[in-house]
Structures are given as structure tokens and as C-alpha cells.
Length: 302
Image (tube, rainbow, N blue to C red; front, side, top):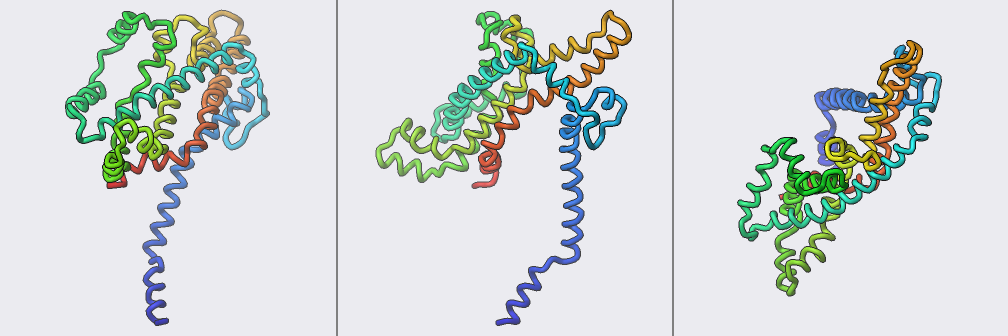
């Protein structure tokens, strides 16, 4: 008996090839992590270092002559705070409406008994590969009288076909058909099944979809740049873009003024990245536990 246990232990020991593989794999993963993490770290230390030190290449591993002037210049502007509020409103409305549209649509497409399922699938697939272009898009929004309204920012963002198909796959692979049949035998209708059975079992995919839509809307600025004319309605990303363009403008003024504007623009470039990213980074830990499950479960389960 002892000999059998000893043989099993020896069989479970790593070979020299395994050890070499682990070392190489660990080195490769550490290199990839460094490539990803260092640019983010550099943005942080560059944002709190003197612009002259950053321009001179002195900032590499740690901040040099720490200063918060960039953050002070950003935060003392009223339009930045207004942009924050606008973006929060746009993002919250987009997430709520997107979930209301995406989750039921994904559930419907995941049902084999849906009438005209193939037609709906083709209808959703076509926009993934073909688009009408910017001018027809603007004409449609203009004819609907949505230009310079918040709905010009929200409505085009409430459905992503890619997210819809991810949701559909999740439902197909994660909601047992036997559970649905049992609910039908107990007399539950389609709405009761969806709200009382499917939704409670779909927290993972709901959290992931909320994160995807929130990040997409938070980082979006193109639709606002095209459709919004009132600066008071600008989202944060567009406000920061305008600040950077204004700070980089070097028309007129003495050489000293031009150099100061260039230094300010260089620092604001890093500060704006942090200011716009912090809310999303703070949100992620609350949905992280659902993230891997919601993204991978559809591809792993059968």
C-alpha cells in the first residue's frame, strides 16, 4: 500500500520539462503584465510630475518634483464638473435602457421556438458589417428632431449587436431547458418564467452587459461632437478634448507664453486620462466577481 502511494506521488511530481515550461511561461506572463501596467503607471507619475521633467525624459520609474497643478487647473473649471454630471446621466440612462432592450431580446433569440428566428438573426447581423455612413446617420437624427438633445447620445448606444449575441449565447448555454419545462408544467407563463426564473439566474451576464455599456458610453465622445451644439450638454470626454485643444493653441503671444502653454498641454494630457478613467476603475471591483463568469460561461458550458 505504501509503495502504491509512493508511486502515485512520484507520478505527480513535475518533470524537468514542466519546470522549464513554468519558468518560461511565468517570464512571458510577467513581461506581458509589465507591458500593460507600465504605461498606466507612467501616466500617473507623469500627471503629478513637473512638465519640464516629463519633457526632459527624467520621469521614468518615479515622479519628479511632485506637483498637483494639472489636477488643480482641471478641477477648478466649472465645465469639467458639468461634463461629469452630463456623462453620469448619459451613462446611467444608457445602461438602464440597454439592459431593458438587450436582456429580453437575447432571451427571445435564444429560444428555438421563436417565430421567424432566422429572419431576426439576419436582421441583427447585417448592421455588424454594413453601415449607412455619417451623413445618412445625421440626416436620420435630424429628421427625428434629436439633434442637440440627450437622446442623440443615448438612443444610438442602447443596443450593441455583439452584446446581444453574447447574451443570447449565455441564455442558450446557462439556462437548463428542463428548468423551463418544469416551470411550464407548474403553470408559469412566459413573462413569469422570464422575470421569476431567468432574471435571477442571469446576474452574471446582466452585470457584464451593464459594465460594457457603461464603459462604452463613458468613453464616447464622437456622437456628442457631431450632434450636440450646446456646450452645457457636452459629456466629460468632449469637455476634456476642448480643454486640450485650447491649451495646445499657440497662436500669438511671446515665446515664453507658447512654451508655458506647451508644458500645460503636456501635463493636462496625462491628467485628463486619470480624471476620465477613475470612475470606471472604481466601478469595476463591484462587478468583477461576475465578469469572468458572465463572459466565459457561455463558451465553456455545453
